[in-house]
Amino acid sequence: MPKVGMEPIRRQQLINATMAAIDEVGLAEATIMRIARHAGVSAGIISHYFGGKDGLLEATMRQILTDLSDAISARRRALNEDSPKAHISAIIEGNFDRTQVTGPAAKTWLAFWASSMHKPMLQRLQNVNDRRLYANLCYQFRRVLPQIEARNAARGLAAMIDGLWLRGALTPEGLDAEKARHLALHYLDQLLAHHEYQHSAPAH
Amino acid sequence: MPKVGMEPIRRQQLINATMAAIDEVGLAEATIMRIARHAGVSAGIISHYFGGKDGLLEATMRQILTDLSDAISARRRALNEDSPKAHISAIIEGNFDRTQVTGPAAKTWLAFWASSMHKPMLQRLQNVNDRRLYANLCYQFRRVLPQIEARNAARGLAAMIDGLWLRGALTPEGLDAEKARHLALHYLDQLLAHHEYQHSAPAH
DNA sequence: GTTTATTGATTGAACGTTCAATAAACAACT
DNA sequence: AGTTGTTTATTGAACGTTCAATCAATAAAC
Image 1 (cartoon, protein in one colour):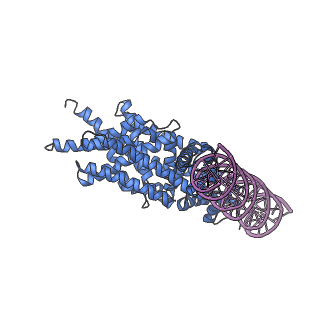
Image 2 (tube, rainbow over the protein chains, first blue to last red; image 1 turned 60 degrees about the vertical axis):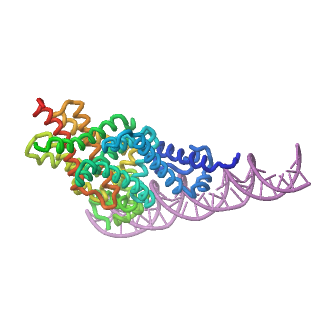
Image 3 (cartoon, each protein chain N blue to C red; image 1 turned 90 degrees about the vertical axis):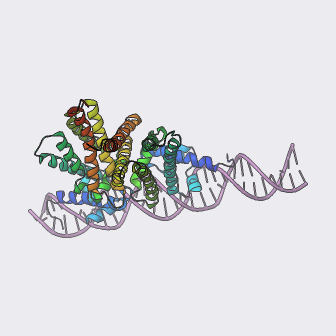
């Protein structure tokens, strides 16, 4: 049933099928036959469009990172104030975006995370994304905190976000996005309140 | 070279070899032969002592969890005060114990974490350990905070600890235990300070 | 001589990749 | 409008590899 212009459609189908398969049986048992069956195509097509299994996995991780990045950017662009707290809140809420946090994406994310320890290409992707998050947080915190404190705040908040993700992916019920958001935002309040206190009541 | 009473020695050798192999090439490529070579024995011995690869992996995860538990228990037993803060600090410091945080153990830990999403036995082990940590934190926080706040504090601190672990396992340089401890303890101070403030200066 | 410990070749299953075959869609030409 | 040739899309069987598990053989210790 070949039609022209199938490439972008098939690529997307196969990426989605990859996440579905990983969600279902894990990365170790996500064979190309299982992924192909999920997408309703034959196994051979994967090598045709992605050059092999590794290419498909890389493309899948790329998409997850892009989606996350987009979710954060969209929220930051929609802000109507420019305060550090508003920006950081947007970053937090983007990280717990529905599309990111739900089922397949979250488990695939964690699977790639573990896998990236020993696959240079995945490690590179993960590293770039990580540094960007850290740099953004650092920049915003720096506007209201001394450098050392800003770096610690950025490290702490990044760890908190990742930890909530991790625990969300592991619990069978999935991540409670609302609770996670609340905990992260509360922590952010504490990080910033510490500053407010220093500056609004310095004589203490 | 068979001597009698080799069983406990071989079991420990193979468990250590498993962590070394996972640290070296990751869980996916930690084959029976590679693990056996690390331990300086033949491949067949693994099935002999552990009934198969799965048995060895389960025993390895069990040991990591036991070591972690012991590190925490030892620090709590060594306390000379009974305050919630002292107990929770001991839990934090136990989690960032040297033997836990260094190289092989940390990467193996994360690998099992990801793997436990789809292997019921590993999931069970991870779940038991998780609930114990949460219950302990909850109990200590409950001594100085209202129940809802205590639960949130426990969830937040658990997420922070896991997040720091996760990021430590992923960075090529390994986890900076000192920084991690500092961030977690600082967060703990904030969680408790919030309470102190409410109770020691209620008229404010 | 029996038990305990260990080896390593063998087996069978599973996987990713390749490629010749096939078929629909399109283009050119009558 | 119909025929023919070319391109694009897809299949699935065959191939070679890799792995975990098995087990008969072996050797030290008792």
